[in-house]
Amino acid sequence: MNSQASMAMRIKFLEALNEQLRLEAVQQPAPREPAGSFWPVYIVSGLMSVSLWTLSWIA
Image 1 (cartoon, rainbow, N blue to C red):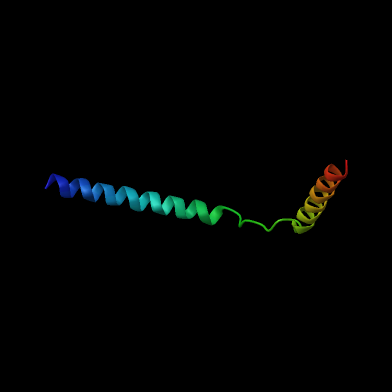
Image 2: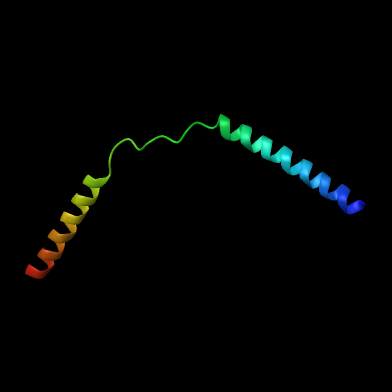
């Protein structure tokens, strides 16, 4: 009988915790999209890497 009471207490605790976390999740603002796209950064970084590699071979 004690194990059933313990299990019931665990279930009640987890239900309360679940409800609290659900309410906190509703209050959180939705994640926003990044301000801009990042692909130009990758292109510039790649071009600089190729340029430096080429200059290192020339020098």
